[in-house]
Every structure is written in C-alpha cells, then in structure tokens.
Length: 487
Image 1 (cartoon, one colour):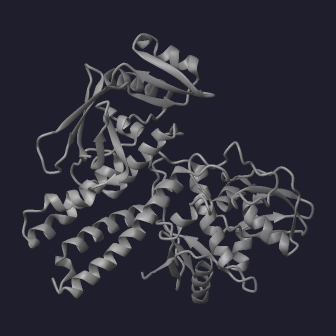
Image 2 (cartoon, one colour; image 1 turned 30 degrees about the horizontal axis):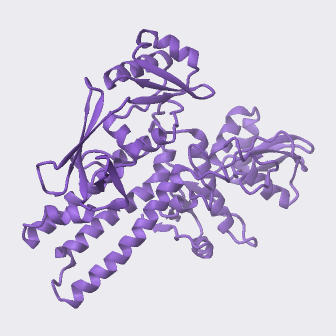
C-alpha cells in the first residue's frame, strides 16, 4: 500500500469545492494524486432562527439555516464569499463575534485530516487516512537530508516548528506563528468542532497598579494548572462549566466549585472576615454601604486586605463557599443551605480543553523518552560532544519546547480578558481552583497564609514554611510542584 501525504489544499469559490493535493514524496514539488470534493462552508451563531432568516433574507436562495439548539443556528452557504457577507451582516446587526474559518480548515477539521498525515487510495479511488499516523519527523529529516550536519541543525528549529504547527492546527505550513496566535487558532478549531459560539467580544483590560508583599515568595502555577483542568480533576472547559446535566443538589457535592456563593447566617455581632476571593472582597466593598466601618477596621487592626462586614448576629449573606466552610468550622457562621448560587463542572463529558491537555501531556512523555535515547546514542557512539549539534536532539527539544509552552499557556489564555474566548465563568473557575489548592496545602494546625495573585497570576506568599507545605501537598496528589520564581 503506497503512502500519500497531504501537502496542500485549495478552496475554489466559483466551483464550491475543495481540492487536496497529495504526494508520495514529502520533498516533491509535483503531486501524485489530486482529490476534489464539493463543500459548503458554514458557521454557528447564537441567535433565534427567525432573526437569522430575517437578517439574511436576501440570501435565502444561497444559504441554508439549521437549528442546532434553542437560540443557536448553523448558517451554511453556497460558497465562502456568500458566507462572509452573511457573517458581516449578522455581526454588525447583533454585535456578535463569529468564528469564521477559511473553507480549507473547515473541511480538514470535519474529516480530521491534516498536513503530513498519511493517506492511501481506496478501491473506489477515494482517499483514506491511515489511522493515527503521520510522518512529521520523517518529513523534517527528508527536508534536511542533503544538508551538512551544521546546516541541518541550523534550520532544524524553524522547520520543526512550522511542520508541527501546521499539523496541529490544520493550516498550511507558513511563517512561524507565535504561541499566543497558535492558541487562538487551536481554540477556534475546537469551538468550531464542538459547535460552540463566542459569548461576547473581548474585554480590553488596563493593567492596574500591582499589589506586592515585602519579603514574599512567588509561586508560578503554570506547570500545575493544566493538570487540574483535566477530566479526572476539575474538567474545566467552555462547554463543561455549569453544564445542564450535572447540576449539584447540595453544596458539598463532588463537582461544586469553591467560587460558588452560599448563604450563611452569622453567629457573632460586629463580625468581620477577609475573604480568600479577592474579586468578591472588592465587589462586596463596592456594593455594601458600610465602607467607612471597614476602612476604620483596617486601620485599627493594621491589615492590608479589604474585610467583609461588619455583620451582626442572625444576619444572612451570600459568601464564597470556601469562606463559608472555613468560617463554619470555627463557629462564626452557619450554612443555611438556602439561596445558593452554585457553580459546577461536568462529571460526564470531557471538555475539549481536557482532551487537548491530555494529548499534549502524552506527547511530551513520549518526547522525554526520545530525548533520553538521543542522549544515550549521542554519548555512546561519540558522534559529537555537543548536544546542540545533534540533529535528533534539536528536533525533539524544539518539539518539546513548543508543546510544553503551549501546555502551560492554556489556562492563562482561557482566563485572559483580552481574548475573544473570555467568559467570566471559566476565568473565575480557574482562579478558584488555584486558590483552593493554595488553601488546602496549608496544614490544619496552621493559620491560613496571606497570599495575593500577581498580574501574571502567580501567587505571592509570606511564609517560607508554606512553600514547603505546598511542595509536600502537590507531591502527595501526584502533581507537579509549583515553580519558585526568583525576583
């Protein structure tokens, strides 16, 4: 069975078809097989069917509108030019932000085909992908086959990044794409595949003056958070937050998130507490009328964090679940189990974020083994005393660096207000999980540490012993240890 490689794809707008170009030689400029297929491009948008028909009435002969679910439709057009016009009309009329992929990428995502995947021709002269196989590394080696060792190593990094990025994102090999743009395309692809729509336009945030703690230790959770978003942990994703199938019945159910708001009754007069949820602290201070009392309390007790209060015996208030549990354990409040505003994650369906992270983690493990083999061969055969001149080592390290950087950036990208994918529910869930892990790392006999989040969402803590507690706690959970950042 002769192998073919997908090297190029073109959408012909007038003929409304995709043309795929295959070759049995990764270096060939000629194509051995051309595959053509009709394709109607489409997009999803969360508006009622009747509104969609009204806005796009002039195109009714060239489009088809399908109802996907309540107030979500799929607009399919005769060709991409028409689809672009429809997208522009809806976007201007509704202020909705639409994910509109180029037809080539749509087609490849629908078939789960990508560049440098391997294919074969069936008896019906159709194209068929060889399951779970690509020849990326062979392609990289073949492209550099006739070069000297020095020249190979010199271009290895750029070639590896281009080909791996192309295969990962279903896009033609092009100039190097920065990591933030890679994530943008990756998320676009998965929103499209999972029929998800954008909730709103990005919120451009202005950096605020950063709070600091003197003599503090900075913990970077970027290597830990991806593992916490996996299905077996918290399964955080755009389609799994506050899902319709797994709403908890009680506040202590397994999938209830700690940023849920639960009603408590206070058991003391003139009571103040400092919430572990910074966003809640500031929102409470903004909305509650007793601002002067809090400022006096801060001054008299020489504290730097805004307190919540004062509360009086019998008074009821919704507060974050993490605070409610902590205060109820020492008798300051009683959880009423009434008027709760819960947040939760799905227990049934894995988020696409979890799927991406799982694939990246598994691939990184494989590369780690390959790097070890490369090291062994390099030293045992004495090919070179410098790993930097070892082609295989450079190839694997380039791939490893690219994928590990993407992995660590995913949670930050999800929570960033300047992206079109931002939703407060997802961003707040990620922050809540991180805060929950910090609090849980503190042994019961110790006072909960004071900590703040930096602009880069690292955690600043004042106690060196707490850093050791964190290391111990995460090791017990079989999770990576947060990195200590030296300022």
